[in-house]
Image 1: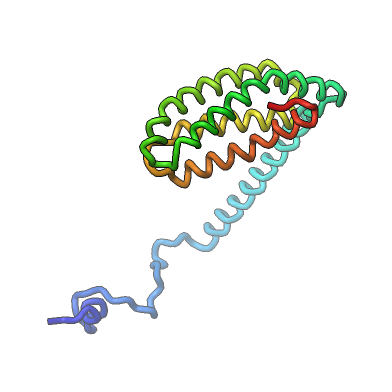
Image 2: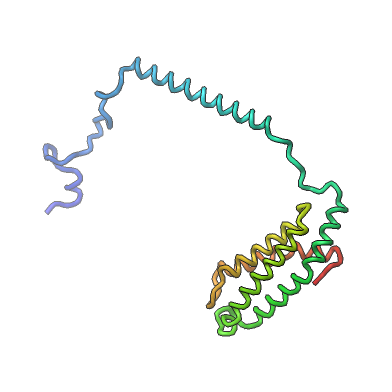
Length: 200
């Protein structure tokens, strides 16, 4: 009975293939003559230079043709403040509604408890309805783009992502991450609106 070492390195003269370090890995018989190889190398180099030049020309032309970037910051800070005030007034009742619903849901018990699982379907449908109505309020007051609009959009999205994935039973790490992210995004509307004297 042969060992694995005997199978890999067969004895000299046997039919099995054996690695020979003194032999080149590839045969020289099929390689082109040196002069032909030099021509191919030269042609390849010229083609590479031409392609690089063409890419550079395309990049320069596209830079020249691009319009000047427009500033996303409003020219008038008072206009931004007025827009924030209008949006805060529009969302204040919606944010209070969401706070009350979320707090009532959390008060039903620990994740996976029968009470929490029973409350989950209504929490999901109510949150989806809230997200639709809050998105409409945001869309009506989205100009100019600013911190309040960006953070409110993120909060709406986070709440929708949370209710899209949450299921009865013990919570998952994804559920916790989505909930935590929504709390961070919530800070944008709260801070902006409270600075304007609008709370919920």
